[in-house]
Amino acid sequence: MPSETKRKITDTDNSACMDMTQHVLNWYDSHRRDLPWRMPPGQRADPYKVMLSEIMLQQTTVEAVKPYFQRFLALWPTLSDLAAASQDEVMKAWAGLGYYSRARNLHKAAQMIMTEYAGQFPDQEDELLKLPGIGSYSAAAITAIAFGRRAVVIDANIERIIARYAAIPETLPAAKSAIHAVLDNLTPNERAGDFAQALMDIGSRICTPPRKKAGQLSQPQCLICPLALGCQGRHADPSSWPRKPAKRKRARRRGEVLILISDDNHVALTRRPDQGLLGGMMLFPTTGWPDGSRRHVDYPVAANSLLWALLDMYQSTADQQRLNQSVHHIFSHFELELKVTVMTGVRRQLMQNALAQDLLAQVIWCPLTELAGEAMPSVMRKVVTLAEAHRGLLLS
DNA sequence: AACGCGTGGTC
DNA sequence: TGACCAAGCGT
Image (cartoon, rainbow, N blue to C red; front, side):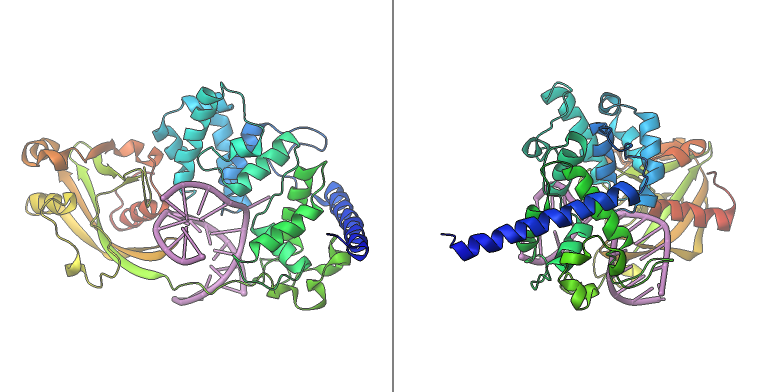
């Protein structure tokens, strides 16, 4: 039961919220970033472009996304075009951007909209949430930005801003419910999309994370912040919000990789299973890189390992060289060191006859001239670069 | 709830 | 160099 006092406080809060919201929208009208997926003020964005950009931007910087966004639009200008593409074509276009399940889910979502929604883009948050790869943030963002509906949009930027604004004491993720409540009060019925994008711009340029970016101050620039008037965190150390738990140390792993080039200039590739690390992407044959392995002899030298079978088969007949330099790569949760071996002049016909069927079925022969276009993750591009430097053999 | 999932940039 | 960060999602 709200007492008279309670009601009064609530009214005061709401009017303060409206002021703050209006400040943010006004700030956006004159300071917003000009980005490829944003429409000029007053124009409604294409939902397909909004979805595409939002998914690409998940855990990914604006600068990294820009060229991929343009390339996708050039290849597939409409949702229908993307849905009609093959998964491999989509993976090729996504190669290098990371978090590859996004590409598979995006493709699947496009197909679902074409089939289950008859090509009519869902404009309700709860419907968008059902699509693969679209979670709470993306569903709210698309709802607000593409369809002008009210939605409470929370990404890491907005989370940080609100945690500071309301001086939320809890540690993430426990702080999320309080953050949502505060933001819900601030979110306007009209222009919720502009409001969300405004906060993300403010998070990028003003209410920055503790670590500074190039050319920017390490401390939040509260003096020019449109939220400063109502901000609680500003009176303490804003960079101390949001409170976060400590992260685990990254593990180190090792493995081996083989560049196998045939006498007719094809290179052996394998495709990763759809689920898990680098799902659906093309790799050169590798050992496993199990967690906790310390030495190369610890690798599971399984009798059915494709890589070991290839090495055994050709060690005496082909031109083989183990490079004296490794490829180092950092994934999200472990570091990998890959020893690289290059073999050239391999007789493909000999291999067809000698290799067991189940191993042979794993090999995809790629013409060297087409290697650059394959759906290869960055870690394999590094392998190519190293081999080129040592042997001067590949193309790119 | 906590973890698996990429990559490039910055200090 | 190690650690942290960037418009999160799925399980």
